[in-house]
Length: 440
Ligand SMILES: Cc1cc2nc3c(=O)[nH]c(=O)nc-3n(C[C@H](O)[C@H](O)[C@H](O)COP(=O)(O)OP(=O)(O)OC[C@H]3O[C@@H](n4cnc5c(N)ncnc54)[C@H](O)[C@@H]3O)c2cc1C
Ligand code: SF4
Ligand code: SF4
Image (cartoon, rainbow, N blue to C red; front, side, top):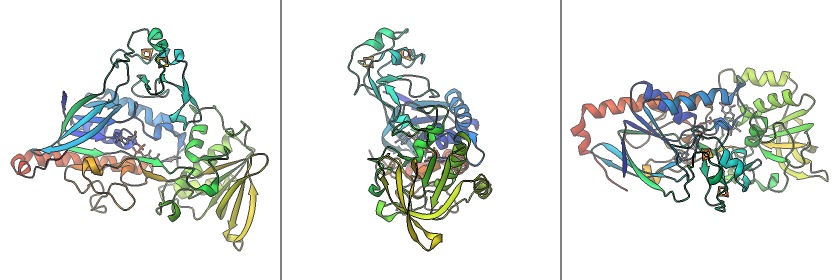
């Protein structure tokens, strides 16, 4: 079994995990980053632009992805997953599954000849199943590392990729491997998942293709998006009237998500401003319960959107039905107009979906979770990155909904806490050895 010894193990390669790695590695600590997907980047690499600066997301994320991949103190393990964790003599030992990519990673140049040759077309998870991908592919254009991955479940073993590969690196016989990582500290940065746009049946997203999630709107607005422009997925028509439905996955006891997802107001305003730029004649309306613009420069951002002519309507959208032209028809209670209920028709409805924890680390990492399912931080006000388990820290949205700025700040804090913990551990090795705990 291959064994790796590092100072810190970071789990999850989104912006939080990458920043934690860089902050530790720049201080001279040896770090291993375990990411379950075939590329690092997390959700941020799929976004269009970031609020409140409207900087290009790829322009911020790709240099960090590249810095992680090329840092001499970071070992990047993509397509790996931690399977079990043991603590021996104050050190954590993780058994990590290396999932087969069915090709030789050292030889793959990311040239994509295999992808072009593959006859199997599949929905692209990166584009939320709207775009297409192949059974063997480089995960997306800005993926790091630029190494292909073969989806054996959907492969028909026709061998066309094998013939097309100029360096003969396809290997259908590759097997999963287990590696062992020893680390003194662990940082969980496993991020978030969006609430499903299909859960709230009243909004009809499962039946109406012109009711989409805000995450998909990010892909439509991104330069790397599936269609290269904003169109209705239902019929390819350019929308003239777009509605945002706020809290369409948050602050809703019927969905079991009672908390505010914190970023939805700001990303809806951001997308509305970007849409005003790409579709200047379109009317954009945001239906909201209350607008929460809490961060630095955020209130000004909201006011700028109002000045640009984006309509903000204080109203609760009860349901969305489809008219004969597949337009979403919203039934809205207008709170500022005596709670009268009206019907409003738009070309496209965007659900401002909320944030859920991506991964439950309780069984393997033995950290406790809060009532919302995110990793609990029992001393949140004094030590926001410290979990209930000694030596295990948390960064970014695995601790709860937050934006990119807060994720980055929390990652710096997690790196500092992890470094301090490692130094303490080294000062008192015997004392630590006594407190050993072992479990699978
Ligand atoms: C539609 C939308 C628009 C947004 N727009 C903005 C914006 O403009 N500005 C802004 O500040 N914020 C925005 N946000 C919020 C922003 O996306 C998050 O703040 C940020 O991505 C959080 O990063 P993260 O690293 O915590 O999580 P993630 O990006 O979710 O990364 C977590 C990583 O961990 C990996 N992982 C998960 N489980 C495991 C496991 N068991 N083992 C190994 N790896 C694992 C995942 O594959 C992923 O790569 C937006 C959010 C949404 C939904
Ligand atoms: S062997 Fe599989 S991955 Fe390769 S080209 Fe054929 S279907 Fe695609
Ligand atoms: S597997 Fe071969 S053909 Fe495919 S990207 Fe890698 S080097 Fe290119």
